[in-house]
Length: 203
Image (cartoon, rainbow, N blue to C red; front, side, top):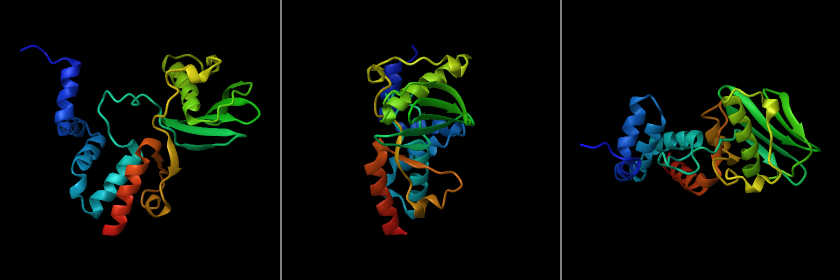
């Protein structure tokens, strides 16, 4: 029997997402638990809903492996205004930050590894491009100081809304999961709020 193609495999996962969940659980990946909870969302009690909220704040609601935003780096938090940008990403035990206030700077664990003239990076999509470039350089073994950015960041394919948080988890829930702060992803916000309201009504 011939091996399944990628498209056949993904089609099978769409029909049976719990197969993907089992595969993840077998590898100790809590995203498998997240998928199981998502699949039974309507039947969950308060304790299970709380776990779903926790896992989705950590990973984002699960999509299939061909999710177009799967490679978008997840921000640990930050802010943007007309005057300044400060976005952080925690990856592999290190903290990366894009800071723009008078100039653009990228720091790794607090040390500046790149700086240039201001780029008017006032949205997370553009900061994602910067951090993606930095991450790629590190993975390839290049020094972070070798980072080079194109002039028009909005033309980069990675300039899109992916997994970046728009707000922190509400205090009544965040306190349960400290000391690890979590943020709700933009694309998950409406669903997350709906589930949180249901959890509050059930508890």
